[in-house]
Image 1 (spheres, helix red, strand yellow):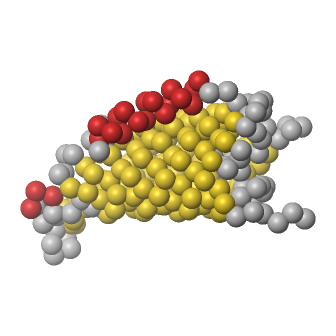
Image 2: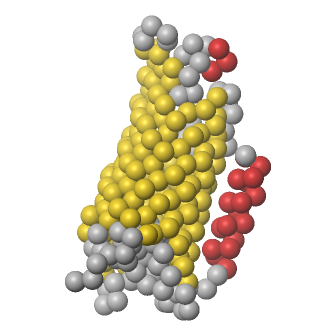
Image 3: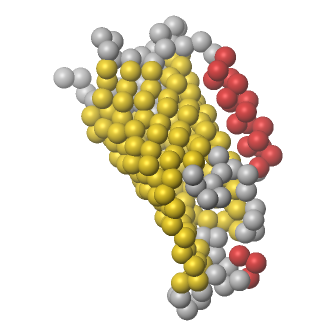
Length: 228
């Protein structure tokens, strides 16, 4: 799977950077707008130096204001020879600026659990990673042209991560906590405010052993919002 991801992600990044912009009303995360489709599904692939993941998510939001999302993924770890179950959730509030509301700011709070890998190399050790971050995301919609829109996004957050391992009796073998800064860069390519392709890079600064993450999110909005 790593070979496939290593080919798909760079090609997607190049595609997004070379396609012309278009329709309006996107979110601060470079995904379909909640103003037309309140409910959205996402698929995501991500890659670090030592792991890769595939997952899916569900998002719900209002045209302007609060939104929330949850996700689940399976992550393969090369250094442990096993897989973990990743569970995540986030909530935010979208604020639009400018005469045409092309700039969006979102305070965001998010948390995640990485359960496993357990019993790696028959060690009878159970692992758990807890993480959370609090920050903001900003997007700027480029001028619309035809049916596409390119939405660059930037995020910055204060983040926390705690790694722990327990033996078969439940005794804690070690526990490591870190505080760091998380920078997030992405470019959303949105078609008709419904379908989006968003490659991204997450950069953890001042995190011991932290690795950049390269990923690709595909989002689709469905369900028509009633017009008032």
